[in-house]
Image (cartoon, rainbow, N blue to C red):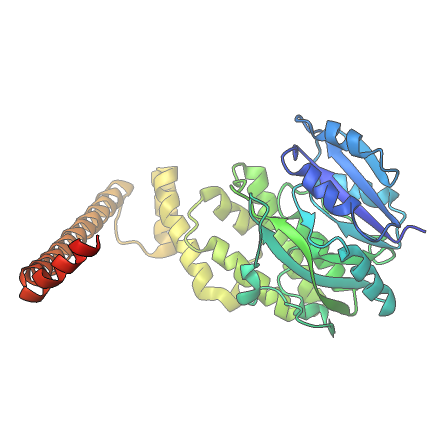
Length: 377
C-alpha cells in the first residue's frame, strides 16, 4: 500500500530539481509514490525527470503550461496514497526520515492533517530559520500537540503539512494566477476539526531571489479575489482569529498602494462596509487613490466627482494641479533642507572626531606608545 503520495509540480526548475528529487528518493519511508507534473518546462527539467523515472515510484505527467494549480490538481486526481504531501521543484524535505516520522505520527494519532515546521533555504541550499515564527505568523511546534484550526496562523505554507486523502478528496486548487495556495489551505482549515503538530524540521522552502510582480490586471484581480474568498470562508467557519490575521495582511498590502487598477478592483470585489473594523486604514487607502486618480484620469469631470467625495476646495482641475504641484515642491524643498541640515550635522561630528584624534596623536603618551608599536611591528 502507498503510504504517502508526494505531488511535485515542475516548471523550469533545472537548477534545483535534482536536489529536490534526491531529498524524496532517499527517504527512509519506501512505500511512497512521487508524482511529478512537468508543467510545460522549456529547460532541461523534463530530461532530469526522465532520468529519475528509473525509480519505479516516480510517475511523470506532461502537460502544457497551465500553472501550478492545475498541475497539483492533476496529481491529486491520480494519487493513491493514504496521505498526500506536496513539494515544489526547488524545495526539499530536510531530513531523509522526515516522511517516515510524519507518517508514523499521523497514523498513531489518526490525524486528518499533520503539521510540522518549515525552514527557509538560501540559493546556496543552506537551511536557515523561518522569521515568520518569531513574528507569530504561524504556530511553531516545539513539541507534539494538537491545535485548533484557528491557531494555525495565516493560511500559507500548505507544504509543511500532510493530509489524509479522504480529507482532500473534494478539495482542489482554484485556477488563479495568484493566491491559489491560501484558498486551498483555507478550504482545509475550514473542514478539519483538529490539527496534530509535531516538532519536526520537515520542509525546506526556497526563498525567492526575486518576487514575481503583480504586473497584469488579471494577476491583481486574482490576488485580491483570493483575500475575499479566504476571509469569507474563515468567517463562515468561525475561524475569526485567522480571519483577522489575514485581513491585517490585506490592509498591509493596501497601505500606501496607489495603483488605480488595484483601487478599482478592491471597490468591485469588496462590498461597502466590509472594512468597518478597519475604517481608518481603508479611508486612508481610498483618499490616497482618489487623489492619485485625479492626476491619472486628468479630466474635469472626474475632478468634480472627487471634489464632492473629498470636499476639495479648488474649483477646477487646473487650480487643483497648481496647488498640488506647489505642495509637492514645498515637500521636496523641505526634504532638501533636511538633507542639508543632516549634512551639516555630520560635518560637525566629523570635525569633532578629527580634532579629538589629532589631540590624541599629539599627546606625549601616544608618541611614547607609538615607538613601542613601531618596535613590535
